[in-house]
Image 1 (tube, one colour):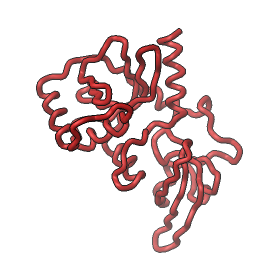
Image 2 (cartoon, one colour; image 1 turned 90 degrees about the horizontal axis):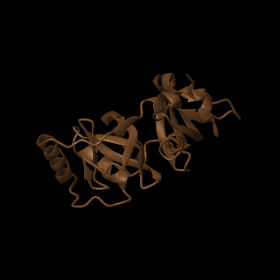
Image 3 (cartoon, one colour; image 1 turned 135 degrees about the vertical axis):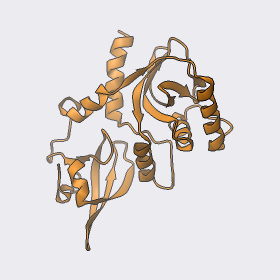
Image 4 (tube, helix red, strand yellow; image 1 turned 120 degrees about the vertical axis):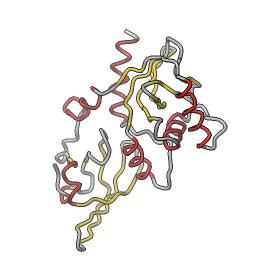
Length: 219
């Protein structure tokens, strides 16, 4: 647990989003009836965002000591997150599940889901129907491992980017986490104006997961 006073420029802080570490850029205090902090921070990719924090948020914040940024080996939160990674196996969709996906696609207003836009495609589909989950992690196939996003319905893969619904080739493997609708909404709100197509998983988690799976699949 950290105090709002611990949020100083260049501090490494986690708890703003699941499993991610951010760097504080600036802090603006508001001492009205309720103490509020306007926090400007950036992610490991250099993207700068702003959020507001209150005393009630201190319970889920952690700040690294100056000069002691978190490493993966010493971060139990990251290990905990990786322990929840699921291997998704191919399984055909039922008629009802296929109907839900068709409805969700129609609600997005998109005729096509373009390649190389997996995060945007998957987040849009989940936004359109709360029966469709959002999953993110890595996909393995054709001797490569890539950071990827897809949808899930009743535990089955729906990948509109790669055009798979339920079943997919035996040389394709999906390993990832399913995010709840509140987590996805929080992610999208933090980007502002309903923007999508930004990954939810931190690059450190993806790199570690990729390294582990490459060793297992391509020894």
